[in-house]
Length: 206
Image 1 (cartoon, rainbow, N blue to C red):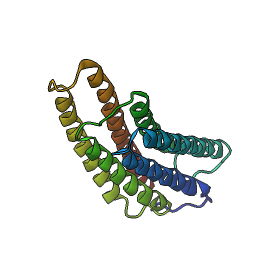
Image 2 (image 1 turned 90 degrees about the vertical axis):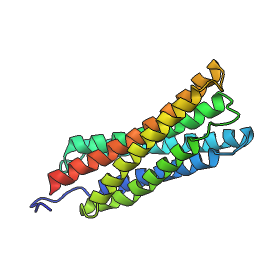
Image 3 (image 1 turned 90 degrees about the horizontal axis):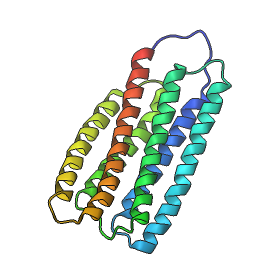
Image 4 (image 1 turned 180 degrees about the vertical axis):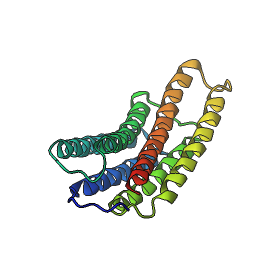
């Protein structure tokens, strides 16, 4: 790691870790959504909305800290990018849950559970990786695995689209379900953006 003569603001590490932990909470709520009935889904949506608001607060705290800090642990643009991508993940997960409730989806198509499982695993890896930003140790396996998971999510997404367009569903239902699976795919993409930003930071700091 590059040697520094100046002190660095270290609270960013704790805030990134808190954001990632909140994403794990969101991924667990997504898991709860599977198999839940309509009343339970509405309650899960409320909890997801609260988690998303907590994520927004965490992101704003990072931006406020960044704007008031003279010395930062790594480049400012990378802090903005990392915080923004973490926030995007929560936004997409909350949107997916909200759409399921708003559209009164009775049954999610087979394959959505695989999408959510991938997101849950990516959330765990991201939460494990954030504390390692302090030392930049043991991060290579993280971004490699998240990129692999994103590729897996792409394959699941394509199969889901093929399933939706196989003639089993009416046109309105296809539109509803496609929007949900598309948003879950965007969440997977956002995890990859986080991993790519971490890789960029690690390369700069090496």
